[in-house]
Image 1 (cartoon, one colour):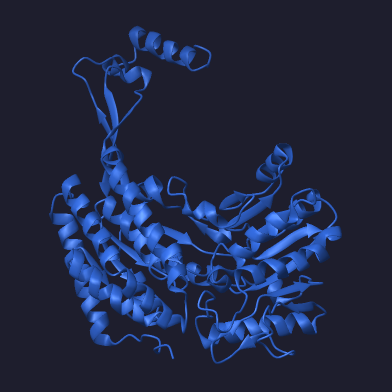
Image 2 (image 1 turned 180 degrees about the vertical axis):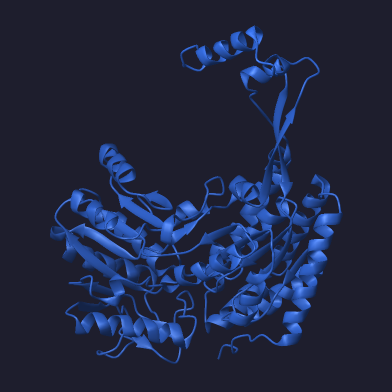
Length: 490
């Protein structure tokens, strides 16, 4: 039985307010952290993850009721270490001031951009990948020289408590603190004048975070979700596509913000896809309830929400197709309440009146929308809020370009799912309802840095030629500039 969710108390809230005040004072009164200090912090973070890998996996499994330790290693430990590796390798280059071109009339002056820490950063992490989605932005914030307060999810109390203990011991409370609690704690934190807030979670809560941050004019990065579509062209190898869709959909039992949310496929291929999806599911997970590789739904609330999505769709005319490779579920059910394991479910005959086609699913349910052409699929995507991710399966480059140029989404994987998020040299972020801003790799460093513009005037400068009084010399200089930039002289 997983532990109960964390709750805030006034003592915890008072302590985190005090911690914020200390961090803010230090960020204002001390010199920005140098390269060697940042590297020391990042290496300490790496050692913490490596040394306590098994403890992290056990804590997360306890919070979920069950989650595969191997899946945690693959989806949380490895990406965190990969991010640290890339950051340590490239940080010195990222920190260097950048030379920029100088305007013609200001020559021979010099321009450059200096990247400075913003100060104190708040990171609000979700429950679905509770380690990775806390640690990844921490890495970026520390690389940029900031101090951080992390607010993990109250739905993963075991992981949250472990992270608080280890992170504060590793980096010190003045550099990194963890705030435990639920909505009240988050509300207090977002009311404080942080220098940047990164929030990962639902679109609805993201709007609340942005509203709170606006009172202090705090910049925000919102990593939200939405309904990420998969489009499969009828000419593409169906088994290859289905295997990668099944892998992306069923990883973490579908509890992934960039999981394939619904499938757009030509009407002639629907039945073949369902059978192939059934086969590929059985290949990955011959059993479900007693399979240590298959993850439980995180809480009773989310478990019941998924059941209600299915019942709503059924009542409105959808066809419900559970996939139960070992026959572990009752013929009328697709879930096991004791383990909170839920069978993959394919849903056909869907329409826009169903909740499953309007809400982010966050579970192993896959609606199928039958289309007649690629143009139909593109139009369907564009008629809905812009997604966090889009997946397209095709070998024809002209059609791939048509999808890339004809749709807008946070990110795209071609001929696979999920994997664009694991590329540390690609920015990760949404657009519109699926988020704003991005991080990962250098983009994360830039997100948590202030790019300070520096103009350095030379003793010898032509700028005084434009000083008043405006006589003949001024007119010649002005006409030259106008001509240079395409306007008529006067």
